[in-house]
Length: 486
Ligand code: COS
Image 1 (cartoon, rainbow, N blue to C red):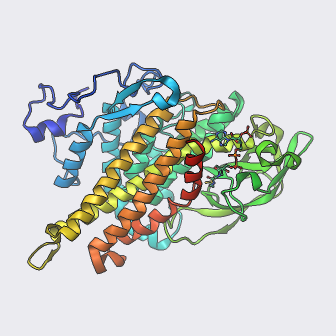
Image 2: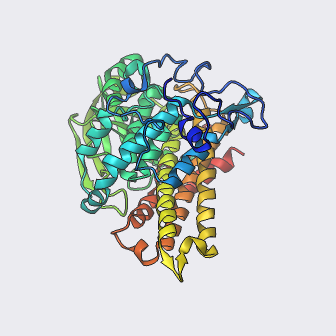
Image 3: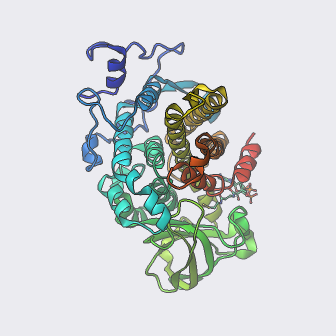
């Protein structure tokens, strides 16, 4: 690979490109094959993803650290980037039942993808973020930008036109987008969420029919679980589907559905046998927006992620072909649970990006803002705050990346996940969500009065962070899941 990921650190360390980087695999742990490397089953390359990065993300420009110094990346970001590259992630899958530890680092491809998305986000997404937040209106330009750059289906199977790059690469993309604007990070995250029931439980015909257009983003997906009575008690939800001949007739109302008003394809949870209750009597259906009896209701006006579409969906004798049932009747609860196990890292990545973005801004501000004759970062009250924020962000990233790396090795089907991975998925969502909330509140504090006004982005980050503690399972539900698997 002509541009390898050590470029920046070599320059920083004054090492010629031909020399081995001084920090390559010199940790105390013995070097073992990387689970994300090309040679192990489940890695993108092992799965036959050998197309060059540029071909898979066509609009993205490769970022060459040797030949140019990107003005968008501050010295502080370079340092951060360096720390990421030198970081050796150690994933233990002992808990996942294999009885051995393994080491991993981000692959060159993942690092390049991260750098390219980081640049795209800075150049093309950040400039319009404030205006989109103020207007609160869905913006197809952003969606088109993500489509053009192949970022709508990073973790979708290659067989159906997806990037096939895995959950970790997907998380990195969501993180980098959310670092400048959480609502943009939510676009690919919700595409993954809405399509996961299909990836996990659909038959070949259903996958071939729906996944290709979802992979490219030509069609948008939504995940319809929550109802006005709540989203936490999944087994207690009320929407019903009754079989009549070759169709199911769905009746009920779903609320707070991300992308609800713009989605082409919606995966909908409904009771097919109420006498068995939600755990055994629910099913999931693929509903297209044009199906008779389906309509979009109220669009919500939200505190944060303001331009993201959050709508009510109304099913009034909605007719769905029987062939659109996912799996078998009665599998609904398990399909939705497994979907959430795989999707929660996406929300964690959104939260992590928000936290990183707020930290970046607060650090830069604290270095420039002078009070009592010196930059405020020189005061311990501010410096320790920033240090604690940085600790939380870095720790969150490690937990999330490890979770994603382990989860992506699991088959995308309806086999049961090891409880330890279910736990890790919830842990990363809690950790990253709480970090995002804490770090953004502190970032506002560092900026003082400027943090509280809309001219500066940290109040937006703070408003956006809150939802990551609520959706895709509240932090309280995550703690329940964690406790139940201890
Ligand atoms: N994967 C596979 N199976 C699972 C599972 C999972 N992640 N979680 C639970 N199950 C199984 C259990 O093993 C149990 O199986 P058996 O009936 O065979 O014993 C069954 O499902 C019922 O499990 P449980 O009794 O734990 O279900 P509860 O009704 O108590 O609900 C919680 C469990 C609360 C964890 C679940 O409802 C949940 O995750 N709620 C939050 C949903 C959410 O995220 N909503 C946000 C809106 S969608 S964006």
